[in-house]
Amino acid sequence: MTRRPQPAEHPVPRRALLLGAAGALIGAAGCSRSAGAAAPRHDAGRASAPRPATSSAPASALPPTTPWTPSAAEVEPRAKSRAVAVVEAIGAWPRGAGGAAAARSRVAALHQSTRLVAQAGPLLPAADAAALQVVYAQYGGILADSASVLVVCRQWTRHGGTVRAGGTTVDVRLERTPAGWTVTALHPAQPGPPLAKPAPDARAVLADPAIVLPPAARADVLAGRVHTGVLTALLRLARTYRMYVSVVRSGHPLYVFGTRRPSDHPRGRAFDVWQIDGHAVVDPGTPRALVERFMRDAAAAGSYNVGGPVVLTGGNRPGQFFSDATHHDHVHAGFRT
Image (cartoon, rainbow, N blue to C red):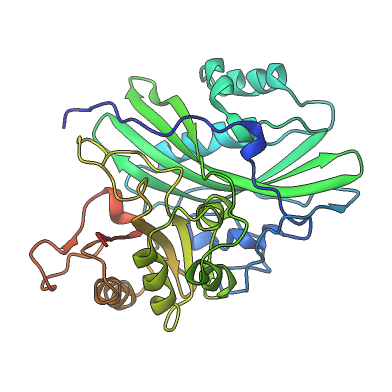
């Protein structure tokens, strides 16, 4: 399959990093080892995941984190590993190892281009030290010789005696070379500033414990840039399922990968879910009936375009359901109105 370059959002200014409460623990990563991530034992994807707030609190140490690794069930696990390694190298450092020069050294140690550091945006804020926990790494697109991996992460930064919690989603672009997958570009999420008073349906989504949003997706909702059809569908699905959302609007390619068709995500008309009721979509042990039922319920909630790892028939309109390699690891729901 021929690779075509894919536009993405411009890198975010450092001030766009969503700050949160220092008490937000890495249990919010919510992924089990069988789902392809190394997660703390206290949260295998079923416990309630804390959400970042807008305050900061004094703390003497950054929270512990664990490296994220893909499962053997992935379509291209090495592409995900490479993307995650670069994000982790840039976004985490011990005291005294901050700044662009040190980040370039860490990236060079991975045999990746040091030019990526200049594209890191919110991954590299001014701070004494930082810790980073990858929540999930999801395909934004996968072709024979190129890929987009959306690395969803939480980050904690220490400033003197204060730890601030935040995070972002990075659209990591890769190309397959004779030496393996190589990272060619980083495109961090750009959610926009929060509204002083979000709409009622946005507030309901933010408050619903069955809808677990990572920092960039939460910031999308706070910014008022998510279509009401997406919000009402999430609320409807939350009556039945506990969902770990990976991407809503920001941090996703502008076009459907490998095409020139605009994606519904950057227009605030789609969401992706990587875990349902504690089961990762990519995990071969996840009941296929659960994923199929969720996909059909997403269609019933108004999605005209539901993708996932299960090939479904039927639907209210032709082509309502689809499946491909990109959607092997998540369920996508797109909306027109």
